[in-house]
Length: 491
Image 1 (cartoon, rainbow, N blue to C red):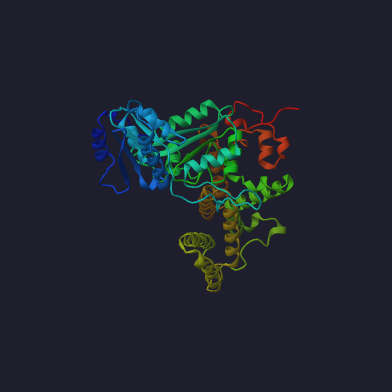
Image 2: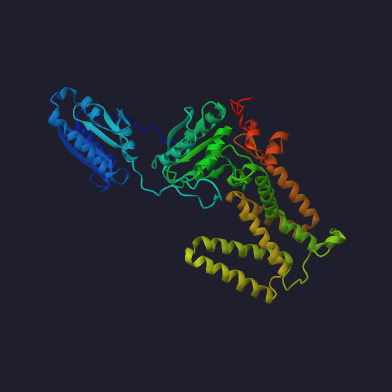
């Protein structure tokens, strides 16, 4: 949070205020800091603004309205009231300190100073540069809305409120960062979200002491969640307003950070990262089927390769009906080394696709899949079975809705492979038990990470396994301790 400064009060002498602005925000040095002096009823009025964060036509219209005061008004003693009435904008507020005025001006608002007055009018005419709402690349659906959050925090809160026109929806704005002064918004439903959860998140945000959060929501996450070296995601990100609104109705709290298109959902569990909006855009039976397929893919991304390696190293563990599992051709390189090399190769391709221009990425993928893979098999570096199972495991990681969880699962998968390669069945069992115990020990803002599996909640677990029809989902998740537990009136 922004540290406490010496409160420099606004002076009645407008030249003192001008000198402060020249020293504080670089007026005259920075080309984007705008300044205009106009005379209204024989008194000087100064306007300060940042050109890139205000719409030029709006600034010109406001100055035109102020100058017209000279033609229709004569009472110079009531000039402050006249100016306030002439500013035809929806949000105008007075401030009495230069520090607050400077912070607001650098946020894209206009500061209006009147000679002889010890306060300034702050006019909200922000018009941040950015793109229009569009469907997020990582959360696409076949049917459903195509809008998504952008880097503009004002647009993001508006997209959420469009779906929740509830007078109890609260958007609390804070500033974080001594130098960046980044806008951070906490959103929640006042009559649903737990007061303890809201207070905890506010305390965590207000306790942040840093010069700037240029990496936006990721920096906020690391301050709020004490994850240390834990690889599993403890918050959920979404760029879809419908997903965010659904979580608000459950009793979760959202955090929006200006300049980020992702909203942080708090608190979250492991199973939150396995949900996808597509399941709720289909019939309940189809949604349940899609959910099971997704669970199978996530399981494959974590355990398929270690299990196949275990059976390849010790075929006696297989029943007779599955004796075909295992490499038909061993190759020149040990199987465990083949799996590790192939996994690293997949990561090479993934990172190359990110940094490769779109017109070239398709061609690069074909070259990698056809030429490199086939030649590696022909020269004996990889066996065909290794390529098959590595590919299925990689596809499973891409099916995982949460990118952060998919990366965590890849690391867990690599650890399992190393344990199986070194210790066989014992290594797999020890690794599996250690992984479960580690997940059980994790908490996200005092919320058990494996809920409702551990601690077990039968009704909530049913909602995890099946996509229950909406008319039968009458209660909110108990793990967020909502004030109002019932989503729909009882009949």
